[in-house]
Image 1 (cartoon, rainbow, N blue to C red):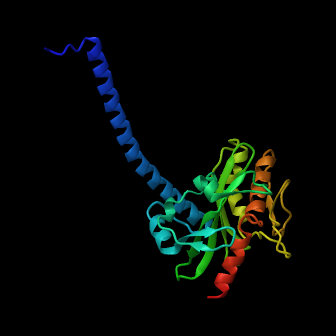
Image 2: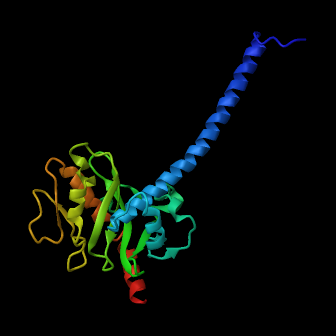
Length: 257
């Protein structure tokens, strides 16, 4: 008996076949796009780390510069210990931060992020002669409207700022997005994170920092809460629940070499 494609059974069969075909196409496309997305994320990561280390690069050389001068490391924030880990370029701190098995709640949450990953990816950067040039650390916290993500580069004294980059945020265009402007980022160069007592002293100064202020960075009029968010994330990440144990471990490690 010939199959009647215009029957009810024919219509159902056609619908099922079409759905399966679309499902296979979507799954295949997602697989291809996932790899492209990962490659794009890796490239952006490498470029942002180089920016935070104040190493000029362009599309032709950033991969070479990163592979020859940057060593990614996975460290435990509680004690600063290094954890062996493959494929560190694909490690996702954001997913770890929302996984109860790999994160901790924050007692003094000045960055307003609620939880943070127990293990964080950092980057040891060498100069062209192989000597330690800087450490690049991830920082993030709540601004006015959004979570602001960035990297900060520190010289080997782990106090002086090499450079900073804020690569993702949803702050007000034309006002709060000053944080990604190069002229404002340059104001961080040479500033000190800590005061003489070892306390976090970096501050965004409303109205502008005074000449010679080693801890002050000019705020931007009309974007006070975005600036406050940046300052608060610095206070958190370089405090006891953030990088403080790690910085002590890095100082000990470098002194022993």
